[in-house]
Image 1: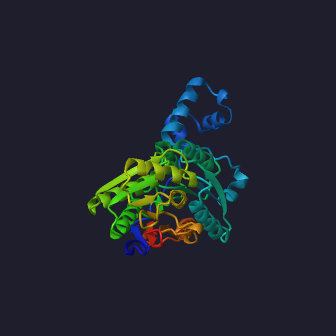
Image 2: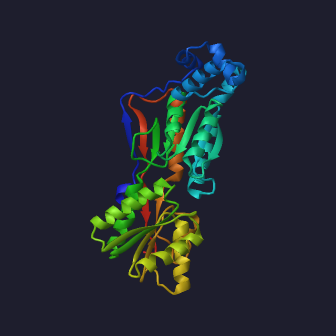
Image 3: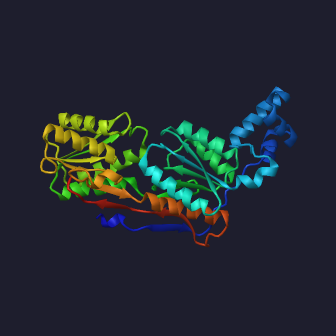
Amino acid sequence: MDAGGDSMQVRGTRKRRKMQRVTMMDVAKLAQVSPSTVSLYLRKPGAVSPSAGQEIARAIGTLGYVPNLVAGGLAAASSKVVSIIVPSIRNAFFAETVSTLQSELAAEGLQVLLGHSEYGEEQEEALVRTALSWAPAAVVLTGLSHSAGTRKLLRASGVPVVEMWELGGEPIDMAVGFSHPQVGASAARHLLSKGRRALAFLGARMQEDHRAARRASGFEEAGRNGGAQSCEIINHPGAATVEAGAILLNRALERNPNLNGLAFSNDLLALGALFECQRQGIAIPDRIALIGFGDLDFSASCIPSLTTIRPSGDLIGKEVARLILNRIHDAAPEEAQRIIDTGHVLIERRST
């Protein structure tokens, strides 16, 4: 096991931050019109003068204002919904976290509204705008990389925000996750400890999947600092599938036939490479050692079993729910917990 990643760490600040909601009154004041004119513009833009409409639109953009679509009589119901946005609903990693989150929140009478951005920041911003228009009790995002528009909308909303599955920068409000560069470094150190010196990190869609790209950078830095003879990063532009793993393996060996230690951005890619090695008669781990990420269900039962790094997806879900409930019930301690490190565990199996 990777001793540095096995324990959960908590960091706090002395004063819990209050996020102030931008109101229609704020828009009216900036646009120098009456609140009733703003209300009319939001319902029927063509009913106000072009000059007033232009000023109102400029104020809305400047302040990051999102109108509340929930009627006054239903306002209380809006507090029962938590919006969760993940990069992909096909990714088993996020499915575990969302499932845990849903169970924890349902026990408190909260329901989940799920959206997926397909790793696109513009799509995420559109989902955030829609979610905020229904006055959610909280918003949960994946990772720390968002568009400037998304950040402005959330900071102006006054809604509790939790960014999950990544640490390493200042969050919008709260964050629960782990350091992806540290995960990559753990993989490189493990391969080096097995005497592997010709290393490569193979990933997919890293031009959009910033967390995988950060694992790759951590791997490369630790590999070079640890005495690797070579340490490459190879990216497949498409989805991270079993088929992509085979493609990446062949591409890597074409570039450097001497590679003997490979890390993958997830277990599906590692499984594809494992199958391709078997097809070509490449012995694992004698000729090449493989390490994945995710500890998916097949990782322990494939032959050879796959060494991998396990992020605590269920723990992330529990901690996100706890932060949300604390904020909703205003029960956070004076030393408010805003950033929670759930760590990671390296599980050594036969592929290394």
